[in-house]
Image (cartoon, rainbow, N blue to C red; front, side, top):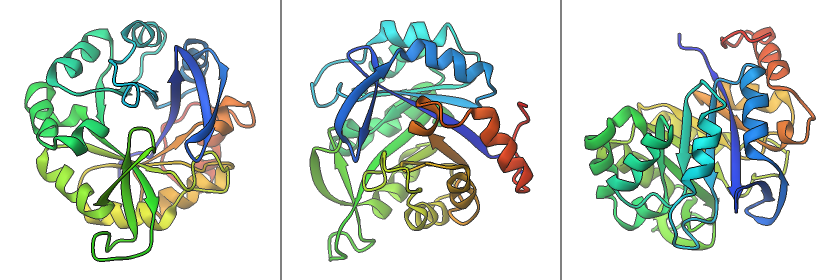
Length: 259
């Protein structure tokens, strides 16, 4: 049985660590490089870096910030925001990213997933999906819709359909970002995470809503996620990464020891 992963997410805006609630009311809360180093030294399994306004501003990701973060951590670094081409993916790899996250541009041009998988390996291509719950209808039979441009644009695309298509196109991992749960600290969207985890064979990372250790347990067990992404609960110092992993170990969940 593979170990479950604890992943910290650095949402970066204009080079500063930022945090939002349901993708709005975004506030700057610190230095992403300092936080990256802190979490790495405390036993973090993986780090995700999102340039959260690159797509909406229609610009390239800030490579200098990625390079600074990569220089401080020696764990897998996954980076996304504004990745529109194989060239963008290659630039991020050269800057120190191990995995490349595609989101908005992949919805607009799905073949981007296949192109990146062919160029850098499927295991290094992550399909990041921003998802909002909607009324079940003929276009979104799962009751969940994909949104893009940092939560600003509804697509009409069904989340379950997009997850399975993304896997078929060559994505090696899914990140399930629940907009409804984002920043609430009320827990992950377990139903959504389980639905997608059962529909694909690639690893699924649950994102959005973590507020206490029990939430990680719930999404890793009941939600069948392969990894749990945390942000506010560690950014504000409520919990340490090592505390979360120790708790999960105590609950009988296999994790890499870091305490």
